[in-house]
Amino acid sequence: MLSRNRTFAFPCALAFALALIVAPPPAFADQEPVQPGTTESGQDSTPRDGWDATKEHWYEDGEMARDHAFYDPDSDAWYWADADGSIACDKDVFIPVDESDRDKGGKWVRFDENRAMVKGEDYRYDAWYYFDPITGEMAKGITLIEDSAGPKWVYYDWTTGKMAHGEAFVNYDAEHTGWYLFDQHTGAMVHGFAYLDGDPSGKWVYYDQTTGIMAYGLQLIDDAWYYLDPVTGAVSYGMTYVPTWDTWRYFDKVSGRWYEGMPMGDWQGASGGAYPSLSGRANLNVHVDIANQVVLVRDGTEVLYAMVCSSGVNDCTPRGTYSVTGRGYSFYNRREAMGGRYYVQFYGDYLFHSVPTDAAGNYMPAEGEKLGQPASHGCVRLTVSDAKWLYDNLPNGTRVTIE
Image: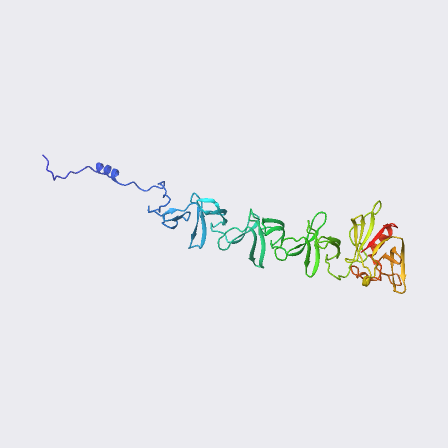
């Protein structure tokens, strides 16, 4: 019988085999990789709050952030975690006011290639955008921003947020409805007069000095009146009917201005556009409006052509109804030391005629500049072109009414 305390000796081969069985395996190159959330020492790297070890995810109270924005005080920047926990990079994101109900609205923001929220101006997708310097919200609509040249009003498309350049029709609310013009390079809103190229020709228009909206109709600008086409906004030139005043006015052919006592610039040319044909007009007549210094050639009550004139000073042009009795190429009045060309007689020595001429037959510019205000000795003065048109086309017997 063997003793309980007896020691047995094992052969070496058997001892080696047993060692292989109980010894831990060596480390191999193809061992399992470290799992996310752990370090190579096997310790858990998931933080309670903040970035994980690889800065690929953000944690709050030990949970990975998903589908909401968060602020990192270390980088002083806002970020967005998508639904899968990945951080938004180089893309636009809609952040709802209520993350449980996106229909309650929110804001569009942008995250750059470093995943931080963009603030201020940003050029991307071949356009300029602007993001609120505090909230990061993408600007839309009329917006005042600061740049190196100072403050400027610009417009960001109501849908895309892209900065507008050139003409743009804006109508996102009652206060901002109309045509605007934005600088082709800077996007700055244009105020005042501007020339627009167009087909078949360009036009001058006016943008309100405060709102920037294109103006229409009668406008008082820098102490002078302008009439801007009620449809196109184009500045009117020459004789133009002004509904507000219910009369015609001559707007300067160069500047488009009119004011009381304005010198007549183009006293040789036509008052308006192309002259109409007067042949075949059953009710052809001429109406002289002394109060407004206007001559209207009409067919019945239809105005065919309007002309600026000068009637007699001190109301010396006779009022009443007359008719055309004759015409002549020129005349000269020695007592008045002036004459005229292309006269059409309507009552005794009272005539329609051109701007006065001197004894040598030369036109008198100082007298021509008086068109549009009383200046004659009783006749009705017209521009040189208008007088010649009446001389060539107005038939004898045509009724003339002076009021």
